[in-house]
Image (cartoon, rainbow, N blue to C red; front, side):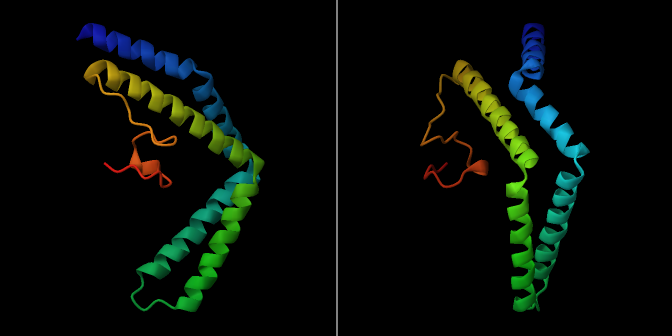
Amino acid sequence: MEKVINQAEILGEAILESQEYIQMRLTEQAVMKDEEATRLIALYGEKRTAVENLLANPNMDHGELAKAGGELQEVEQMLDNNTLLNKMRESNEAFTAMMQKVNAIIKFVVTGEKEEEHDGCTGSCSTCSGCGHHH
């Protein structure tokens, strides 16, 4: 077991030294220091909570919900147009893709099973945008 633990530590260190991890951390730190990005993230949280609260109300006012939904979409658009937030999203996606490859390799070595790919599908339905793959 000691060999497995040592190899896991080596893998962990390699992940921490990877360009994907370093870039992800740098962009996350830059976002946290950027007033506009942090303001947009906070505003998005507020607008999303407002919509969720309206949806949770059994006597919800559909007009209020439409207005709150429109405000949420406006903030989403501002998030999408923020260069720094886009860079952070891209770096997170690159890191996630690397980790999915690492996990697929470990799974293959241990079980002999290859990850099925369906038009970029990683086999994880939690982040799927509708590839048609079903577990």
